Amino acid sequence: MILQKRVRIGNVIVTFFFCMLLIACLYPKGVFGYLDELIACFSLLSIVVLFIIGKFKVSSVSMILIILALVLVGLISNYLSNLNISVLNIAVDSLILLKPIVIFVASIQLASADYILILRQRLKVPLRIFLGVIVILFFLNLLGKIDMSDDTFGNLRNFKFIFDFSGAFGLFLYALIPLVDSDKKVSSKIWISLIFFLMLFTFKSQILFFLLIFLGIYLFEKASKQGVKFIHIISIVFIGMIILIPTIQNYFVTAEYSPRKLLLDDGVKLMKEYFPLGAGFSTFASPMSRTAYSPIYVEKGYYLLHGMGSGESSFFLSDNYSAAVIGQFGFLGIILFLIEGLVIIKYILYRKLLLQDKVFCLTAVLALVGTTLASSYYTSSTGALIMLIAGALIAGKERKEK
Image 1 (tube, rainbow, N blue to C red):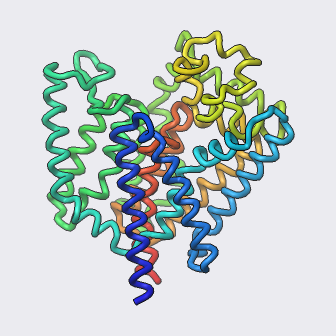
Image 2: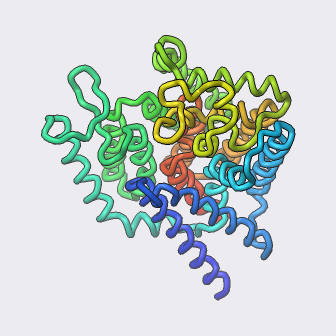
Image 3: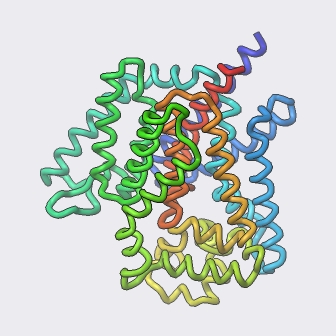
C-alpha cells in the first residue's frame, strides 16, 4: 500500500514537471519562460529528498557524482578567477547549465514502470487533434495564407508554428514521438512519419542532425543482432557531422560576422588562461553571464558588437553551449562533460529497452549534445522536455527488470 502511494506521488510529480515544461515550450513569455529552471530546482530537490529517505536508485549515482564534480570545478574556477560574480548568479547559472541531466535523473527516479503508457493513453486524443491542427497550419503557411515561417529553402517556406525559432519547434516535435507511439504499428508509423516530415520542414541543420542520428541508430539496431554499440554511435555521429560540414562552415568560417566563432575562440583562450580550470559560473557564454553582463564581455569589448551588448541586444551571448563549457569549466570541465555523456549513453545501452525507446533516448542525448557546438538547445525548455521523457522511458524498463 505504501509502495503504491509512493508510486502515485512520483507519477504526479513527473506529470507536474511535464505540464510545466509543456507551457514553457509553447509560451516562453514573461514568467513562463523560467518554468524550466523552476522544474530543474524541483528536480534537484526531489533527488535530495529521495537520497535522504533512502529511496534513491543507485544506478543513477555515477551521473550525480559527475554533476557534483562539475559544480566543484565551476566553484573553484570562480574562486581562482576572482571576477566578483554574485552567489545568486553562480547558483542560477549552475542550475541552468546542468538542468537537462538533473531533470533526466529525477525522471528516472520518480516515474513508475507504466508512466509513459498512462501518459500516452491520456494524451491520445488531444495530441492527435493538436497534430492535426499543426498540419492544417503547415499547409496554410506553405501556401502563404499565414506567416509561421522564419526561413526559406528555394521557394519553399519553412514552418515554426507558434515558436520564435523553427529549431525549437523541431525539438518540440521530437519530444512527442514516444507519446504518439502505440501497440498499433501502422498507426504509430503514420504519426511518427508525420512528425519527421514536419521536423524536416524546419529547414534547420540541428534538426536534420537529429533525423540523421535517429535513422542511423535505428538502422544499426535493426541490422545488428547484438544491437547498437559504441563504435556504431561514433560512426553515426561522424557521418552526421560530415554531412553538415557546409552548415558548420557557414557558422564558423564563411560567415562575415560569426558570434559563435568568436565565443568559441575566446572560450579556448579562457581555458588556456585558467588551465586546467575555467573562469567559473556566470562568466562566459552562459545565460546568467548574459543577464548580469559578465566583466569578461566588458574587457573584450563585446558591447561594441551586434547582438553582444547588454539588455535586449545580447541575444548572441548565450548561443553556444560548448563555448560556455570550455570557457567556464576549462579542460577539467570538458573531460567531466565527456565522461557524463559516455556514462549516460552506456546507461541507456545497458537497459533492455524496446527498439523505439532505445533509439529515441540515444538520439536525444547524442543529438542534443551534438548541437551544443552551434546552439543552446541543450539547456532550453524543449531540451529539458526531451530529457524528462527519455528518463521516464528508462524508468519503466528499470522497474520491470527489478
